[in-house]
Length: 471
Image 1 (cartoon, rainbow, N blue to C red):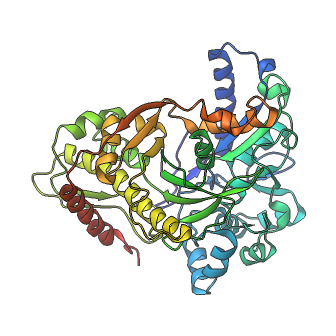
Image 2 (cartoon, rainbow, N blue to C red):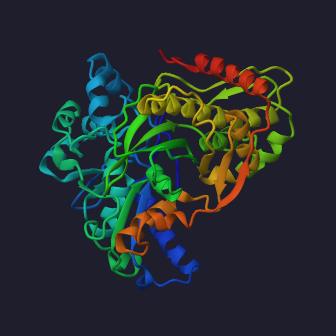
């Protein structure tokens, strides 16, 4: 669907278009599988988590385009909160830093900038949701989200697992705007789809944010299990079990699933596959993402070029909303192949930064002094970009650890199916899911340790150049 850029740093989606494309996808999937809607046992939903929609509960019309998770228009709101010393209390309650990434400041911006919206919200007519809530409302007219999505809003208290009145007051958001909270996998509470939409009345039994869905899809069910998803952004999650693990290394604490509640540490990278899209759509130096593998392999290295794709600031572990994209080390020797390769390497370097931060937090939590425990563990990967063999080999080389690609790359969709299927007993237990997981390929590191260290030092220097650009 369309990516809308009204001005630098702003990113929007048309929520109505997303709903229409969803309907087309449902019909197409049924047709391709030669399945009748009445054959469906349940529906699972997953979504880009922080993208924010506010719509009229009577008409179903959005008041504004959806504000996407990458959008940076709320910088001033976030900076005021930081200046007012609110970061400690927000992180303590939510597990999140103050950042433009999250919905709470986006909702505040909409209430302050869309004419008449606050009055509608106070009357209870204007309601908020992330994309899961928007889709479920269009399927059932129920205003509901699950705890994984709610934990990304900066409004959910991780301890009480309820919307927090102090946070709502801080952002001046009426509680009536917020959806009901439900378990991620539940046979009863999400409602039943409109037969005119799906073709039959089918219960909605699962709802998970995309990265938590991928964690389930990768059957990372035990504390210490981790996965990395390569999509528009890049997102590494580690299951921490029933314990809320606070990060001291720039990561997020989030709900991993709810039923038997478990939590996760997350490293969120804003730009991964989106950097490849930028090469294609903005610079036009490639015609498709698939080309990058051959182009990058046509050179032995980047020729000293580093690309820090901080188009929307830097997320984990830096959290610098004033950083901007940097392409550095250019010479007359530089070709498009060097830039393409530097783009792929940037995805891998960012992943290494997050893995190192996760390692620090986890080692501190479990009380171990040993360094390198996660580096020694194979990294499970998923998402559209993992089809690129060269990218996955680069990832193994830059990490110095094996990278494991499963036979099913789209584990986000698989996790949504698992959540719905578990709720209705299609799968009897989570242990049964482990039998479905299969390895497609393992990528072993090939770089020398000296090459790995030298390239990573260069990356860290490039990141320092990108930081604070707008200050």
